Length: 126
Length: 110
Image 1 (spheres, rainbow over the protein chains, first blue to last red):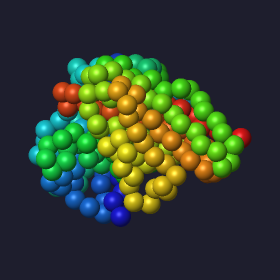
Image 2: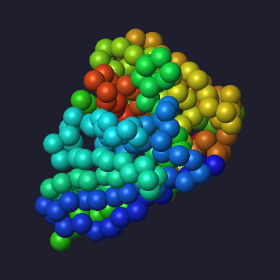
Image 3: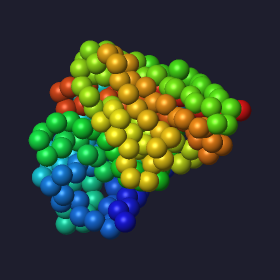
Image 4: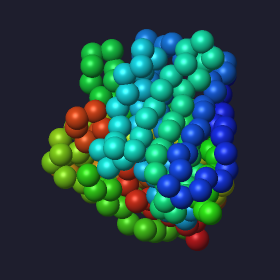
């Protein structure tokens, strides 16, 4: 059974960088058919896509966050990571990592996330 | 890139059906047949229940069905059960290797 677990600081100061890691267990992150994604959810609000990465290191980002986001992958540790720079209170959210079936075998963007990690709350406050 | 539009709430009595809409544009829902739906219980991570507009992952009851017409996708829950009370989110590919979620719909079983 594939499991994903987010880890990182639960409190980040304004203007600093948020850093989270997702550890994948029960399967290899070096999958030919799956990507690995980050999604966030502000308290009481809806989901927002952050970005996705393939195990070879090719990332895709939400255009609205692209200038502040970096997603990377470490296949030796079976982990992928999120860095969000210059955070503000608006970045306070539960951050989820998830396996992302972004493209099918024919290159069509089928786009679904499964499974998800349990999520981790990151609060931006001084 | 705007969020897809969903009604904030929907409700039905046990055994009834409820349909949730997800409206986008020709750049997302209308342009691609790659809409997925997620169910989320309070304090829990979302779970995919529909992908590629109308496909159900194994283990998801066939009471859940999806469809799409033009710029609007829909999720129908037939034979509502108490356990279906949750938040539901749609998502669509929106071109240029990115995607967008809907604002979410809270389903209440009366």
